[in-house]
Each structure stands twice: as structure tokens, then as C-alpha cells.
Length: 291
Length: 291
Image 1: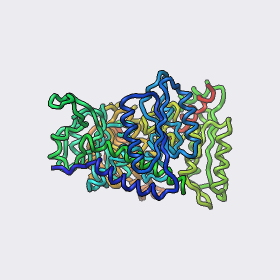
Image 2: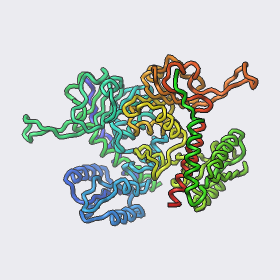
Image 3: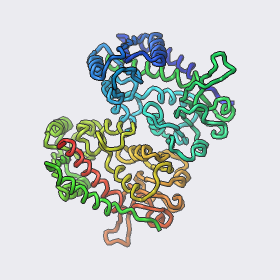
């Protein structure tokens, strides 16, 4: 029976640590959360970020711009926040809910690198590709950084291990592979064009799945004892539930939990870690300024 | 018997293509090559770059600063070149031969991204990690870009292939893996901490070696028919040669050439491609300005 890697529990430990760190700072760290429009899913995520922030003494300012906001106006707002010395971290909630076309990539790169607590700018990504993974002078993307924390806490040896990452997204897969490489794992990156996926996954001592395909990974894909990290979260129909649906990951948890050595549940695995790492980055940003 | 992937030949074809492109431009592209001191190996490389540039009509300006140059003076020089509109591309020849400590990483990142024809700045690297591989609005690092060109010309199917990269350097291994990932290969990155190197290499349809260990890869490491790209170049003792030494790569060419489907020789493989890609990037930089 696999060890359950509870992101919920670990994020509580991080919460306690951050609360202590913030107390020692001469100022409250400030995070600006910029939203265009009011997508319901975005509202849920923003609420989670605000709650975590508040619980450790970080001031999360929710800047909700109307759906009528265009790219130029959004750029002006970001400029202002970049220049505002009282703001330590800035995140732009994606996707935009705007009446106008807005280039998400362009906007992500307009956040000043030293305030880019989501770690999604090209500059922070380049530092990661170049092996800068200690978190000084750069920000690591929150979801992969949260995954690394869980992998480390699994007790597995990372150096020399075979790690497989399914997915190559900007937010999870690509930076995840880099974090594993620079923690000395031998890393294979798989994606939609991979031909022998099951066979490759079977070689993994450490497996991170971030491909957005509910219940893709089954028991017979998993090397016995492997660490399995599931970044997927999807709602699938389930007639046994009152709501008629349930949340699942990219890994079939019930099927795999007897084979894996350690595994993250969904929900309660990677999700809470992402929020914890975002607030941790914000506290780090404030530390630099208050030095 | 493997197809020999002659970088010498392919770079000649690129030379012809670039010569035609430059003729059509309203101005001669200008490349600034900044050197501190006068290391003999650097001088050889710079001469090769200048010769290739000259042969296609690119004006390569060699800016050789004295060994007494310190970091501040070098930064001032780069500032000047960044601002100089007549200069389209800038490269900083490493390593420095200075009497003072100079932070190579800092200096590399001070080259303006739109003039960074070596493609080594964090910003260009981040674009690569984020999947921007078409060469518009960014520069691809020269050696891996040259390797991709040779892999494409081998005729091998890249999408869905198993590719293995040995090495994770900023200049070759790390960007190489990204180029292969975004050309839809399933990519495994190996390095000094990899445990089962031979076994992993044996799974490769495409193998790129950039680890700096002369003659490391032997026949029995190679999957029959694989494309083998060798970025290594080392001088080893050889009493049968007049000079007492010969140049070899990280792959034992003579041993592997009957098993591989296609293979690069050393010298005359990857080396000439690096120079061709540098000048190609410089021509691209000038094209953007002259639009």
C-alpha cells in the first residue's frame, strides 16, 4: 500500500513556517492578483490564494478589472504595479475573460521578473533551463516546485533515479522536467506524440503526470514502488455521487495505490501545494526588498 | 555502414544560402565579437567565425579588449554595442582571459536579447523552454540548432522518436533537449549522475552526445540504425600521428559507424554547423532591422 503524499498536510506545515517568517519581517508582503472579467473557476482559485495569503499575514490585493478591459489598459495596470514599491509579487490570473483579444504570453512577460512569483516569465524560465534552481534571484513555477517538495518528502532518492514527466506545458511539464534534471534525476519527457508511453512510464522510479487526461495511468503502467505525482484534476460523471460527478486526476488512484511506493491523491495532493508555493514565493520577494 | 552527416558539406550549403540572402539585404549585417585577452583557442574560434562571416558578406568586427579589462569596463563596452544601431549581433567569446574576476553569466545576460545571436541569455533560453523554436522573435543556440539541422537532413522521423541527450550544459545539452522535445521527440536527458547510461542510450533512435568524455560511446551502446550526433571534440595522444595526437569526439566513431544509421564525424561534423548557425542568426537579426 503506497504512502499517501498529502499536499494538504504538507501545505499546512508550509503555512506554519511562512506565518513565522512573515512575523519576522518589518512589513507585510503584498501580492497583487490581477484578474480580467469574472470566470467562476478563476474566482475559486483566487479565493484559495487569498485565504492562504491571509492565514500567514500576506496581503493579497485582488485587482478585478472589467470584461471591457483591453490589452493596452491591462499593460498600463501592470506597469503601475511593477513600479509600485509596496507590491512585492504580481500574478495575472489566466485565462482572461475579456471582450478584447489579449496576448497571454506577452502579458505574462510584462510582469517584472523580480515580482514574477508565478515564475512563468521567459526570464525566470531561462534561469531554470540554465540550472538555477535554488530559488535565489529567480522564482520557480509554483506547481512543479510543489511537486518537488512532495517528491523530496516521499523519501525517495532523486539523484540517479529515472524520472518520467508526462506533459510539456509551460506551467507544469516543462519546468518540472528541469527541476528533476537539476536535482540529478535522469529525466524523460513524454507528451501527446510519444509512441510507447506505457513502456516509458513503466521505467520510472519517479513519475509526474500533467497531461489533462482523466484516469490515463493504470496499475500496469507503474513500476512497483515508484513515486507517483498527479497534477491532473478533472470532473467526471459519477452516478453514485449526489452531485453526479467526482474529481479525478490523470492517474487512476484506486487502481495504482497498491503498486506505487508513494502517490498523491486528487484532490488534496498537488493542488494545495501550488497555492502554498505561490505564497512562499511572495514571502521570498518581500524578504529581498526588506533586506 | 552509416550515412556520414558531414557538417562541413551542410555548412557549405548554408553558406551559399546566406550569401544569397545577404545580397538581397539593403545593408551588410554586422556581428560584434567581443574578446577579453587573447587565449589561443579563442583566437582559433574567432578566426573561423570571421572567415565564415566574410565569405557571405557579414561584417564581423573583432573587438579585442586587453587582459587588464575589468567587469565594469566590459559592461560599458556591451552597453555601447547594445545601443549601436549599426550592430545587429553581439557575441562574447568565453572563457575570459582577464586579470580581474568577470561573472560570465552576468555578462551573457547583458547582451540585448534582440542582438543575442549566441542564444545564451536567460530570456532566449526561457523562450525555448516555453516552446518557441521557430526562430522568430528569439535566437536558438548555435550548436544545438546545428545538430537539429543535421538530424533533419539524416531523413529520420523525429516526431515520436526516442531521443537521448547526454549532457545538460547551457550551450549544448539543455537547449538540445528542448529542440528535440518541441520537434515532438520523446526525450531523455542523461548526465554525470545517470546510473544506467548504456542501457538508456541503447533505447535511442536519435542520440546527441555532449559530455566532453573522449570516445565514451561504443558500438554496443548504439541501437542499430540510430542517428548519432557527436558534439564532443578532444585531443588524445596518438603515436601513429606526426603531431603525436588526434582529435576525437565523445563517440568512438570507428567503432560505431557500422551500427549507426547516420553519424557525424569529428572533426567536420557538428563544429562547422555551429559557426554556420551563428552567422545565420546574425543575418536574421539584420533582416528584422532592415524590414
